[in-house]
Image (cartoon, rainbow, N blue to C red; front, side, top):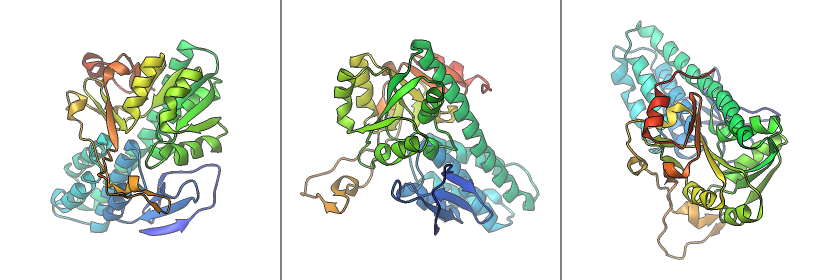
Length: 358
């Protein structure tokens, strides 16, 4: 995987296809350095997903789709594309278990592989589909931004204070963002006065990534320690918590970055409305409820190494990456197909039967 520096610009793309391969903004280096990685193979993409150079459920799915396109390009031709690409599919599918967009994107690519095509047409067809998945995600974000902003206006036409957790912005998606897409749209409409971003331990996606995105756009943002939000809600008039999602079960339970569940409980106690923003590809209708969502745990060093300091005292470490927020703590789920207030299984089934809004 090649590494190349970039000049800081007003616009950035977390993922971009080039003639050389998939260009990824290395999110581990932000905000200190804007460094791009060039992935030339499915193995490169799998490594970037695993080590969190690219992160965020929609972005992971998009990257995996490009990974399959790279694998097909590397093969060039095959008598049996399904068999030839099977190792690449398996490698990419195993990188991050919780983000359902990964499995969804790979399923779309596999369906393309199984269509009868001239041998030489398959790499081009897979690349075209990966680009379509990428473009479609950004279009969905724009729609969700508009729908979510309408919800904020519905409850209060004045500029509001909102809280967000982790990073669900352009860095985590095909562009624009899910939760931050709503925040961007609402701020442009004069509906947001201040964003309060949780630091989001242990990877500090809020401190490093969300703050970086919002400051670049001139959107007022302040940071707080994750456990400061209860005090913040008690002392400050906060209207909404707005977060993304990595997987949504059929009953409306939501898996998102660790700390989201506690945030939802605090919001309920303080009368703060709770919004989840995610594309319909994040909804897993095969899982009846959130108890069935596989939750990833990561290496203990993520908690034991802070900067250059080693904090290991010999204690055991519990480092879950995600938690599940029950549907009854969620006021609204925003997707590109529409909005669900007070989500439940019937409402999600109805939503998934709809066509995408435009």
